[in-house]
Amino acid sequence: MRLGVAFIGSGFNTRFHIQAWQGVRDADVLGVWSPNPKNAASAAQLARSLDVGAAKAYKSIGDMVADPAIDALWLCGPNQARIENVEEIVRAIKKGRGTLRGIACEKPLARNVAEAKEVARLAKSVGLMTGYLENQLFAPHVEAGKKLLWARGAATTGRPYLARAGEEHSGPHMPWFWNGALQGGGVLNDMMCHSALLVRHLLTEPGKPLSTVKPVRITGHIASLKWSRPAYAKKLKATMQADYTKRPSEDFASVMIEFETPDGQTVIGEATTSWSFVGAGLRLSAELLGPEYSMKWNSLDSGLQLFFSREVTGRAGEDLVEKQNAEQGVMPVVPEEYLAYGYTGEDRHFVRAFLGKERPMLTFDDGVEVVKMLMTAYQSAESGRTVAYPGKGIDKFVPAVAKGTWKP
Image (cartoon, rainbow, N blue to C red; front, top):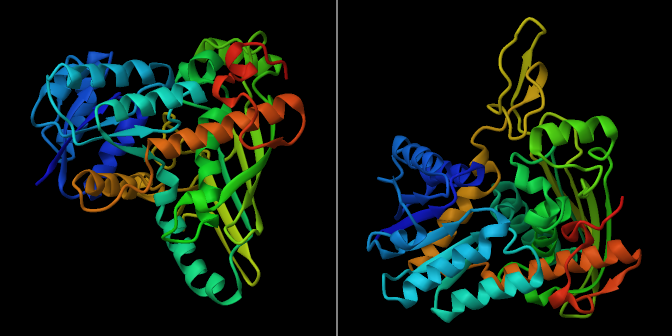
């Protein structure tokens, strides 16, 4: 059997998944819905042009659920629409309009713990299998590095004790990301969801659940280093309709997570995320260190570089690397970014999971846990102290950045 997949959302993230589908077997991209019909039609056309499925644009989410050709949905819409989108899916199923094998959701699962728990509850109310989409865990370099270090290093000299992860670029593509109320925060909520889960994954023994490495204490720090400066705040207001002189969001975040292992050892995860990084483009990085071994990964160390002199001019673009910041000089190139960043691996995995061929590596319950870690980090940043995990009152907590009351 082949899985018929449709996307909720038609923007940058959906298009990465559609490109990644070139490496996915046993599934076809058959549909796209977006509140912007033109964008939905364009994304569907991309899928057809790549020959990954006879995709078409749908008028509603309910119509996709009702189509017997659609077996699973990938939620790739904006954070503020998450509950609304899932509610429409559940409503269509409860009314008997159609059935689904599963639902996969992009990071973060929701803007805060209360919303994340509601998303998970809604999915469970109709018995849906769920998948939490976290591409970096499936990045080929991460998969190979973790497997080898645990098999050779940890097996002979002891488990790893320190993991580091980072995600940095010059800022998001769309205005809603910059709005703390819509997005749920700033860069900590937007990108630390990747890094906090990645360090936990690296510190977890292969084949064992993430729960075997338990968060104990979290120290978080946030700052607005670039985009609150007058000149950049003016630019941001003009391009993204976000006034950071009045309602700023953090453009830098760091988190230290203390974990406890099954044998009582303390291991540490360090993570840094930034919207204020200036370089060739998006930079992903990871490290894992143990008693007699280490690994490191930097996505910009791609092995391919181009050079363009001042005489080479043209329009700005992102054909070399995501969030590209320049078109001249020495430029690293990341071929097939969707593969390098793990999109192909995660899509292949969740297709197989929804077809019953393997157990889902991450579910909505894992997504809830990630949001708990993020909110505890915000509590730490706001209080200026290390906070025991999970933070007190975490189920009702909303970051000051999301409420519009945070002052850098």
